Amino acid sequence: MKRLLSALVLTLAVAVLVAGCGGGGSSSSVTDLGTVKLTDNMRFEPNTFTGKVGKFKVTLQNTGTQIHDFVIPDANVKVTVNPNQTVTKEFEITKEGEYTIECTQPGHKDLGMTGKLTVTK
Image (cartoon, rainbow, N blue to C red):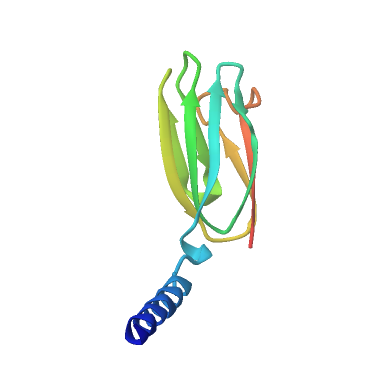
């Protein structure tokens, strides 16, 4: 009986140590920007975002009848989304700062299809 109790205590101690060694550091986490609607009203909804330096994920839903895109020029991100299409994109930003988001389809940016992503450390 004493031997069984010792084995049980040892097993629990090892389990606690192994659980404490999980490597889930923030360097591998992904900031989910959520779902962004791209509309024929020439808007990103929502159009302001925040996150930390690292990996990002965004789901783009084109609810309109025109082709739109989601471009972050300073982060080399460009996703084109056809009408009634939903696309999920992952990308990485390695520097903090404010990044402009725009639709580069002809005339869309000038009509207000812009946004901002603020990236912090």
